[in-house]
Amino acid sequence: MRLRLFCPGNFNWGDTARALLLLCAMTAIASSAQTLTTLHSFDSTDGSFPYGGVVQALDGNLYGTTYSGGSSGNGTIFKVTPGGTFTSLLSFDSTNGAIPVDTTGLVQGSNGNLYGTAAYGGANARGTVFKFTTKGKLTTLYNFCKQTSCKDGSQPYDGLLLATNGDFYGTTLEGGANAHGSIFSITSGGTIKTLYSFCPGTACTDGASPYAGLIEASNGDFYGTTQAGGANNNDDCAVEGCGTVFKVTASGALTTLYSFCALSGCADGQTPNAGLIQGSDGNFYGTTELGGTASNGDGTVFKITPSGELTTLWAFCVQSGCGDGIGPDAGLIQATDGNFYGTTNAGGSRGAGTVFKITSSGTLTTVYNFCIQTACADGEGPYAGVFQGTNGDFYGTTGGGGTNGYGVVYSLSTGLGPFVETKPTSGKVAKAVQILGTDLTGATSVTFNGTAATFTVVSATEITTKVPTGATTGPVQVVTPGGTLTSNVAFTVVK
Image (cartoon, rainbow, N blue to C red; front, side, top):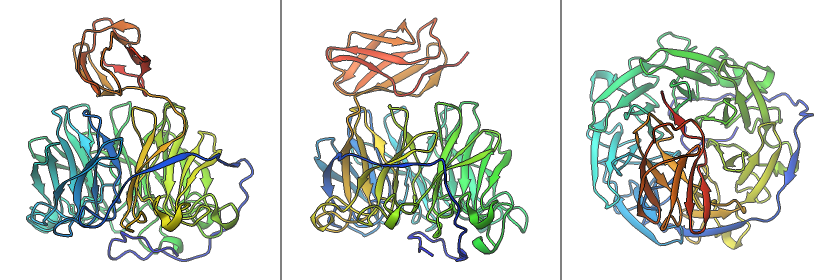
């Protein structure tokens, strides 16, 4: 049994041996060497153990958090340029939050501010939601456990989702009306609403303890996972269940789509710590930290349809010495090449974790093995996933390693080209849209699926525009002196 770094208190995952089954249709491929650059090695004073990922803001810089370190030892918020210039922006002091885990990273609102959560600290020591300016000012929007018995939730372990209605949505690991976690919405001004409290019955068949945040699907509903609960309480998962995939509406109506460990030995996966991503094919993709067909149950990559039909795409540690990785704690992204990318926090050729690529049909490629540099200067143990910047490169963090042993921020080049990203990715005609990119100065054209739009070049990394009359759903393209850049996802024009 592998010990999880963030094991929440009373969990006691079973240690029953997993059945060894044959994955006939799945093939692993060793990747050719890729270029990884360590942008920053933490030294504790500027933060330590960055378990959260990084995001690219409209100014083109990367922002993220560290789990601990800083002036009070409670974690930090930092900025790093794509070229590696690092700035520590804030140290949490417990009163304004502590221990920001936030594996999916911060989210930027349309006002330019960043929003996130801290798992602990705040007025009630049970976590906070905060707003943070890129200049370094933090405002606490909400202190959890404000209500009796923490009915409003406790310990938000992942980040926020900015929904198309302008509100933020998230989850808490504990608290809620039944003390097994909750789903909440919060406005940019700090007005919070509990949408759902998990485990209204003794068996927690609806799920329990959501470690990950939510995504908003193309149908307007929200989807997520719980790391415990579900219909399959058995010896493999003790009494808490093995986790679920769920759908929840904006009004709080929840549907459990899948309960893990439905197969013998949890061959379908167990303990999904990460959230989901909706692929371009309309299906959802995710990971489980445990379970799978390998003898040690070292995690899976799965696909699940909107109706709840699950397919295991990959079970980790099927290669000799677990060269394909162990224990994916983070979720996936779909990159501009159409493939999905993620990380494992252990395994690989050096046992220090990997970056991997997997197709929608289940062909896995190890893109990078951490700790291949002397003294693990390139990092080890990536708990967060990767993020694709608009220059085409991937960015991420490792929980340990680096020249000081406290983790790193890295970039990884695989040869993918630049693109643009729209914020938001959907809207009605005349909706204001921000376009994030690289080298946008001198842009001469912006089109929504071929329909020209008026626009303003704000900076080399930002363009502002509006959805033009006559636009239809499709890619956004920006013509620059360096070439034509296409959006990483299609922009949905809402009628």
